[in-house]
Image 1 (cartoon, rainbow, N blue to C red):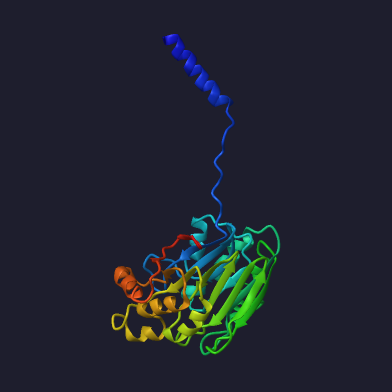
Image 2 (image 1 turned 90 degrees about the vertical axis):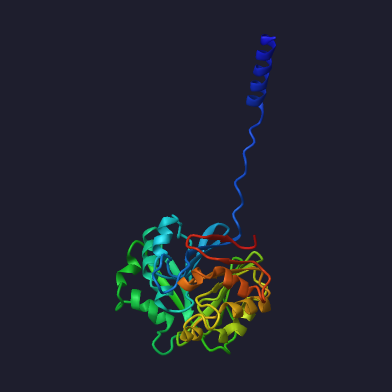
Length: 308
């Protein structure tokens, strides 16, 4: 009896060893993915300033905004910036743009060859410069960091200033290799601003940037049928936030109406203020008065596969 058990055990082990090994395939990388580097705004309360990396087939390719803390998050996530050559700036407030030099520094020091950047952002007005002048103030010959253009890698910059009038047409600014980037003017008080739509392999993500409610018709047009709309949510419904902030930001109820009108499949709220942190369910409920789709809140280091 004991002998037959030993024989059975031996046969079982031999069968296992001789059987072909079935290796489990690695999960497929999403065609389009967003990594939230920073989900906060201008106040220091534990979130990095607004910033996102957009990945195509698992490779980081596009930087959207570069708020303070983005550089740190890139290091913490051990992200490879080798293929990032497109930068989209929604506007030039500090909490969306101050880490751009730090990003350029890291990208240059980890590159194997020359880098040709294309950078897009709003035309200037009032106290705010053209995006081209903003970049020149860092890397131009008379800028703060002229050494950056040859520090680690030789860098060149093609900077495009985008129209900011609300009646400006929606335009396509990138169309290559299946990647399409479109933009349209928005409105953020006295700060020139634009929103962006990124399409790849039939999937679409839209970034509102900071905008007040006067720009909703433009955003609705840009975000039509998108898989995900990342909307900056910095105020509560009136009158629960300071009145002057409604000249800069869109409240939740109007965010919900915009999402419904555009037919987006989902909402991710970012650029979160402390007031929003403590009222998430109230914010979600307000949005759901008009929008029936999923509503979630961003956190730093969040990875969001688009269309899943």
